[in-house]
Amino acid sequence: GYTLGRNIGYGYVRNADGVSDDFLASGDYELVVAMERTQANIHLEPMYDPAGARVKA
Image (tube, rainbow, N blue to C red; front, side):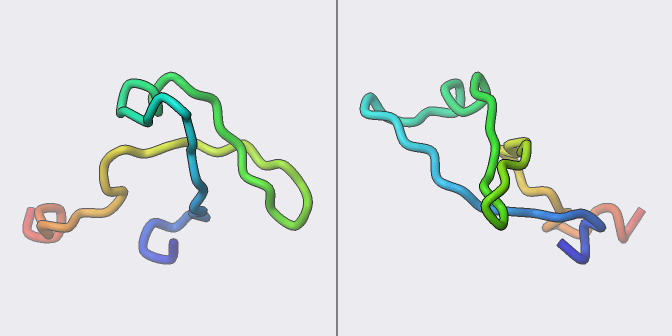
């Protein structure tokens, strides 16, 4: 995440009944990094400015 100035990670969320935005928002998450569990926050929207609106302001 050089552009964001923070670390980013990817993970998988599985649920036998399916995965919805509401299901994702209600969870607590962590990723395993180098065999250690690390707290993670989920983002349902892009973390960058794909339209370039901040640059043009």
